[in-house]
Length: 328
Ligand code: DGY
Image (cartoon, rainbow, N blue to C red; front, top):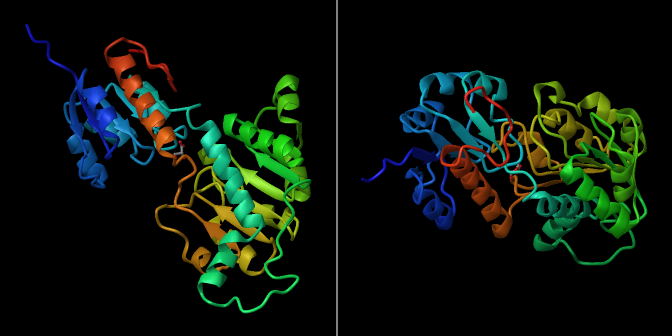
C-alpha cells in the first residue's frame, strides 16, 4: 500500500540536491522559477501544505497562519527569523525552526571582510581607479583607518559576534569590547578576549563598531542619530545583522557630513530597496545581504532547513526549534 506523503512548499529556488532529499519524504512543490510571491500568492501556494521551507524573507504571521490552517512547520534557511511571528506560530501550534551554527564562521569572515573594505576604503578606491582617475600617487591617497591594534566594538555577542571577536583579537591584535543583552560567562569572554561594556561606552570608545544583533521590535533603530553622534568621528560602522537596526536615513546624513568616517552595510531597512541617500555618499560600502553567501554554507543552511522539515513531520522532532507549540 502506498503511503500518502505530506505536502511541503519550498518558497524560493534552492539547491537541486535539497529538493531531491525532500522528495524522498514529501510531495514537494518547489518555486523553480524563483518567483517573488505576494503574501496572497504565498498563502495560496501554501494551501494544503504541512510544511514550508522559507529563506528568511517570507513573512509567517497571523494572517498567513489563519489562511493556512494545515501548516504545521515553517523552516527558515537563515539564522535570523524576524520574518516569523513566533508568538502567533506557537499559539497556532506551528513549529518554527531556523538554521544556526552552519553559517557562523562564513558570516564572521564576511563581517571582517566588510570591516577591512570599509576601514581601508577598498571599494571607494577601486571605483576611483576604474573611473580612470588614478594619474599620480600621493602620500595620503585613500588613507584609511588602522584595523590591527584598534578597538573593535561588537554589539550583539551571539555565535557570530563571538567568531568575529576571535578574528579581531587573535588575528589582528584588536582590543575587543562588546555589549549584549546578557553578559557572557567568564570562560567565553576569555576565549574571545572580549570585555563587556555598556552600549554608550562601546559607541564612544570603539574604532570600529560591528552590529551582529538580531532584529526585534525593541531594537528597531538601536543605532539612530543620537547613537551615531556618540561615535568617534574617525570610527566605522558595520551592519551585518538586519535592516531596521540602523536608521539608514540618519546614517546617510552622518556619512555625508563626515560625522563618522565610513560604514559597511550588508543589510538595509526595506531591502532589497536601499535608502537613496546611501547610494550617493562615497564613504559607504554596500553589499546585497551576502554575509552567508558561499555555496557550501548556503547548501548547509538549506539542508538544515530540509532536515528540520523531515525531523518534525516524519520523525516527530525538529533539530533546531525556535518554539515549543502545544501540539509539538
Ligand atoms: C541569516 O541567516 O539570518 C542571514 O542573514 C541570511 O543570509
